[in-house]
Length: 152
Image (cartoon, rainbow, N blue to C red; front, top):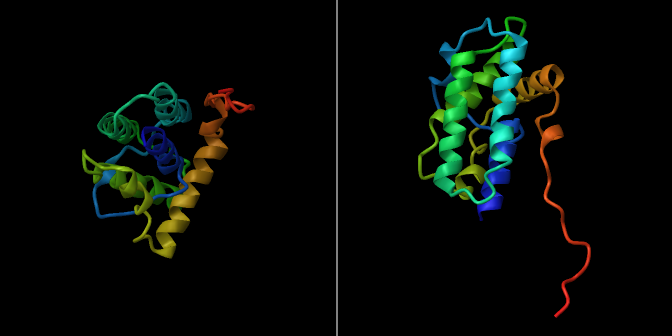
């Protein structure tokens, strides 16, 4: 369960399965962040999560919320397209609205209420961030999977 929630968290913030649940979030975030600060902030969650294999659900949620707060303080680069910025705001709103006791099932249902426009904006956010900062998955260390069945 923990590794499934951890993986869901990385997918969630990676931009592939996001939803919108109301106002707030990143709407007030600055629009003049340097690309370096923006990318460092964005990548920090993935760096932190890569060390949380034994974390509880609550610890994972707290880490995601802390990351979102940092991203909201940092903001986005001035050259971020309008739709990508809207996707950023949607992402931050979603994270802000997560219950502290959210579980894996909550992540699995998170995109149920997305409109076509919201989906496109979240995709733009993901594309902009990947184009600007590189893929967040590039630096993750994937655990080795055994190639043989253990002997009995």
